[in-house]
Every structure is written in C-alpha cells, then in structure tokens.
Length: 178
Image 1 (spheres, rainbow, N blue to C red):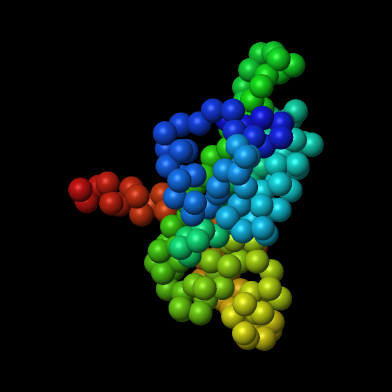
Image 2: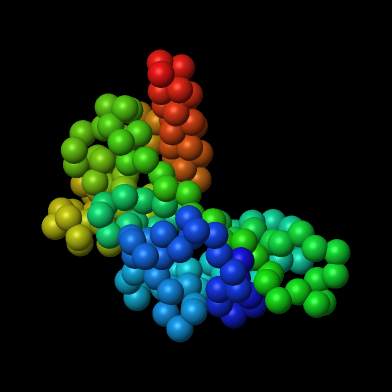
C-alpha cells in the first residue's frame, strides 16, 4: 500500500521479496522507484495519472516495464476501497504482475520479433527499439506489424491482453496436466 507521494505505507512478504530482488522496482528512501531512471520517470508519470483520475473515479492505472533479466511486468495502481478517504494514509495498492515472455515463443515469433515484442511491451517506441537493436526504424515497424498479425491484434493494448490470455491458458493447461 502506498501513500499520495508514492511512499510505502505497508507491504506483504511477497512485496518485500520483489523489492529485494530489484528486478522491476526498488525502494529508495521508502519510495517506490524503477530500476533505471527511465523506469522511475514512467512510474512517477503513471502514479501522477492515477492520482489525477483513477483515485477519485475508482479506475486503475497500468504501466509495463522491462525487468533487469529481460522479463517484463505490468505495474498497476489500484485505489484502496475505504469509506472515509479523507483520513486515509494509504491511497493505492501497487501490484506487479509478471508477464511471461515465453508466451511470445508460443505464438511462433522469430528471435528478432521476440526481442522487439519485449521492448514494445515495456513501452519502447519503434525509434528507440531500432536504436537499441542497431536496425532501421522501418525494420522494427515491419517486425511490429508481424507481431500484431501473429497475435491477431491491432495495437499495444490488445497485445498486452493477448499475452495475459496466453499466460492464463498456459497456466490452466499446466494445472490440468499435473
């Protein structure tokens, strides 16, 4: 649970473990920050958006970031449900949902498309991804179109939803075979 300044009010044992691993977020001066400066800025912007709109309306704010080990996760700020918000210390629950990058392989992506997809899901833009991968922007745009086609989606948000469905389906299948 975090307060209006994105400072930790209380956390579960699992949250303590996530912070200790330092793969997606860290705690600096009891404040949630990203592992990189860029991720810290993304988290701050998402939290600001949440406080401006989601807190009062009851909507969550989502952000996808890349982990330090090539993994990706969805960070969600959800409002606390309390009867007297004026006296609240905590304003939001911050949750981190790892997105399984192996779900990308299940969709028959090439190795290059998988790298682009992970960067795209983590919030990268075609120009940034091209620069990081040392390829042309047109190459990345072509790979993005191919990724969307293979997932049968039209954009970034639909791709995230498809990955969640893929992860859920995989988990259900694993549970059935056990």
